[in-house]
Length: 529
Image (cartoon, rainbow, N blue to C red):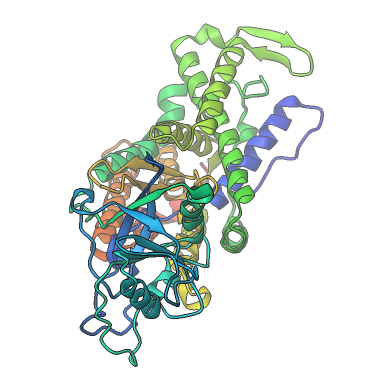
């Protein structure tokens, strides 16, 4: 990226440098696929199936109580063998949890297992042997604790299968596995002799996901709003809202991307992704949360300030002289503390059921700010950037499993069972889904196509084009169509989709095709807007 030279004597430039840094980090860290698919994503197509060992893998909701106090539900996955769990909690049985002795469940337990759920650790013997031992001891179900943390719904748990040498298992109890961290929660609840009861069932996913239309509207609306923001809200592209440093923004604050940005993006983003893949630690997740909070703060301040200044032009001129900062607008003194409180409240309560509202608001404001600061000058740069991002998505989603045994991007996007979830997404709760999960779209799937859509709007204005003979409306339709194809692909393939696989052809392909048809491709390729 091409950055203006910093000036240590200017508070405005110091604040601007921080904004550039945050924008760069967010562009690198915001590559998140749309959403997880249904249970068929667990099928590996390799493990042998035969009568008695041909159950589909099912996502399991594990609800547990400690001395009658219900705790947060955990997630597990069933084995190829064993009894099929009921689809609803009302059809299941709540039973006492018992740790067998030995705790691996590989030998007859000295602890009574009758009518209980045996909670055993993975290791020492096969899954079938554990299941047979638990069933022979009278257990009603077997809950296995994985010995690898944070990958409860990944390839490693698909090993609860039979081999070609196994006889028909004929296991008559359900067999479920949970992650190591989830198992620790259950075991810690049993410390001191406390009674732990467990209820397991496998809810079916609804055929219709009512959250997707709203998420689609948020993404399309964010691109459209950010593209026309300077013209419609600010009113003059040479004006901007007060920055955090107190001075008004200038044209030199625009970060104009260059062709070499594509190579920088591919290398840097890949390194960041690999770092998050191999070092999925709590501190790295919190680092991204902090960066998101800082950028969200700037986004909230920018959007609120421009709206206020638009409604009250005199508010732009009211300033107060402060030590170190110099002249600071009254708008900043009012908006910044309120935005800071909003961000702080979200950071503290980011795991609450309604935290997605604050995350989406901060994310949308941040993306509006990014698309005002970062510009594509022409489609030559757009082609280099979007094609690179396109290949990046395909490699890290579809090709990386052949190298790293699992999809690097999807693994990073889903995170681990501990620490905060990665906030670099717009999310919407699945109200019709028993799992109460979220549909998501990564900021990058809005920002990267949004850069091209925003360019088309500036190009149309610079060349006196309107909606009928310009490119902006066509690219908005292309973006909306590409995003729709993403969710159709998600539904059909039942797995996370790299949205740029659909969005790049539907936006870049649209402007290139239209430009060639209108004889303006050379102008678009070498434009400077």
